[in-house]
Amino acid sequence: MTTARLLSILDAHQDAYGVRDAELARRIGVTRQNLHLWRTKGVRGLPTRATLDGIATVTARPYRTVLDAALHDAGYLDDDADGEPV
Image 1 (cartoon, rainbow, N blue to C red):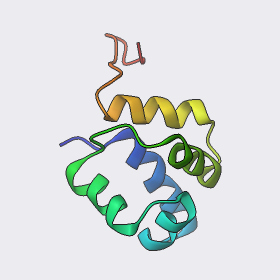
Image 2 (image 1 turned 45 degrees about the horizontal axis):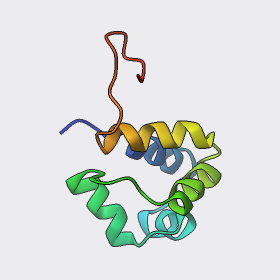
Image 3 (image 1 turned 90 degrees about the vertical axis):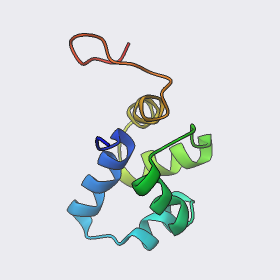
């Protein structure tokens, strides 16, 4: 399985700030188990707006970037030939 885009955003934040999974999950408003499921099974459905807001806030990324990553990972958004979201 390729690395999920949403997890790439979270992993970059963890690498930059040394935050553990449990603390990251708390900050974005999900359980540690939920974060673990995203890592092992992938993002299977679109997270709630509150969760996406939490990710955007904690990682200091624009909400649209986080939403696009989640839509792509959940299978609602494809890439065109240039790798840009459609």
